[in-house]
Image 1 (cartoon, rainbow, N blue to C red):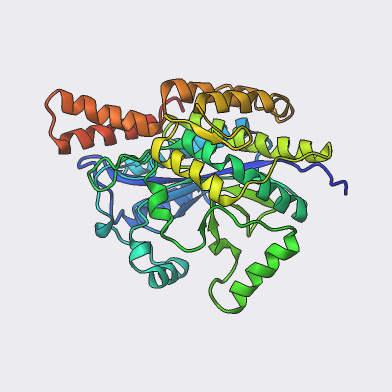
Image 2 (image 1 turned 90 degrees about the vertical axis):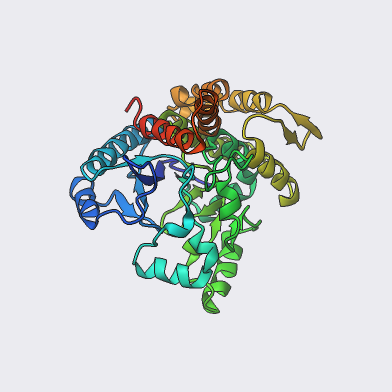
Length: 378
């Protein structure tokens, strides 16, 4: 059946951690006046998150990745300006290098109170931040069809975004430790496979009927049909410290969805692989980021990550042209060459240690790098 071409609009949500610029530790209970100031400056585009030490921003519905980039630049700059008035600064990192989750306080809001009560210790450990990308897919069944196919690419997107190597003052050895924390939640991980939107909704309705969830927003999959908008929402990625990385990855996801629609239009499709296989690449992205290869299931081989991305970018060239995001996609090789935030954080720590810094001093150096890089080139 022919389906009208989707709008492929894009929206990006980012979560930041708020740190004390003197101690570099998390601001466990930032002043309430700061939230009022945020609302005054950027009403409806900034929101408190589960923990008081977090803040979330979101763009409006954008026609292009370039437009979203401009809005995020404004939002990052404004959050940084307002926070500075209170001796704080935002960092775009998915974990804080040394602060303890046990010292944090969750936001007093009904949804968050219910989450804290239901999830107990699992929720208290949610000292993590992510980036969510919405792409407009107007047709319900097409949204499910693309959900099934796009899961293949989720590990690739995660690998490019990693920014959480440290946890509670230790190098975890993982490039995205955030995912280890998030995976403790129920209804997380790779999405299930559904043949139609009706089938998907039937499963959601069962959980709602028995009182497990109030609505589909409590499905915390790596990729999901948004409960609020006619979009596919990609949620697997760490929040990117460099804004250019964020918009490049968002544009990459947008192009992947258009490519999958383009294949469908030509009576083709991307092969759907079992979650058992995709989870292997998901783990490799979580553990190694861009450093090691991933499995090419079609070839049955482990392939260097750079090679896989080069191949993907070639496939997406016409989609980048159609979506006016050629420049954004051209930044992806720079991520591969310069490395992700996780790599940079580890390098900053090692450099500080190499000149005699204590662990505490080295971790503060990492926070300083995160503070400056979060608002770099805005």
